[in-house]
Length: 410
Image (cartoon, rainbow, N blue to C red; front, side, top):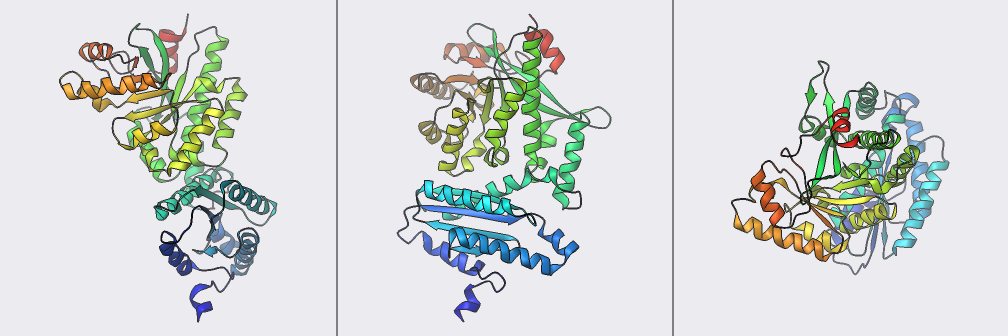
């Protein structure tokens, strides 16, 4: 009876019911550390449709054997093509070594591919959030593989091919908005902002397409396109004898947590001969939904790779303060909602002044106010000691050629 209730009949691994039961118990047990591995077979449905269910079953049995050989009994088949392994009271180095070993075993196989997402934590609080984060890493890794798949793989693969075709056709453009030194009035950087062009040549606002790509797990292709475009721009400015300064790019959670994103970013910079320090990666408030250990590790590894890091939308979430205490940010960007009320709201001014002072105490963290639209706001921000600003008062986001003429060309 126990076998029937807890064990998957095909693979011999524990089933979803056993997995759910263990998760319920895990927070009450004395478990100091936990590692979670979330795995998904790429295209099992297509394999079943083209080669038959027996072929699909053989692949499931083979994958289960590989997983169990590395992670042992705490491995589960939780869906038709999804597996999870839990490593209890295992230190981070040992866990990561096992994940690497399992990926190597998967890579050696020729009949299937498996997307893997993993997360390690030194506590078991919010276990369901940790499980969700591991799944998000897996989905992010999986989404990067769509461009290499045939169009009949699934709907996401078709959408990825269509998006990549639109990028190749020049349907996406990168505009630049200057970042101005509020004390000198000189430009000190820029933010790259993506725009889409429809069939009639009309510019589409990011608010009208970015959320769809985020929901479909395809935003990584836009992020990579923007990074490549910015690196190409910086190379072009340098080759033409223009000014070269730091440009910030917005990177989604899906892109950042995907495997090899940082390595790929460094490779793109190297291809264009651009020092990663010229690329400023903006981390938005939504990153607060990530497990703290994962986010802190990602930011530290980006710094080690040479990238500059900005905290975007500061002032919209209490979690920002905790993150500031954990890692170093090169720039803190104050949300436009604070700038909007900076002139008439004394409390906003007090908060702003305290935050600016805090960033100065950190030593080398710059402060930037977003959404400056008039001279009154500028004067108050200058008085409060804010160092940088951007907004329509200085310039709207500009096409590449116009930005070159106004700010780059000597």
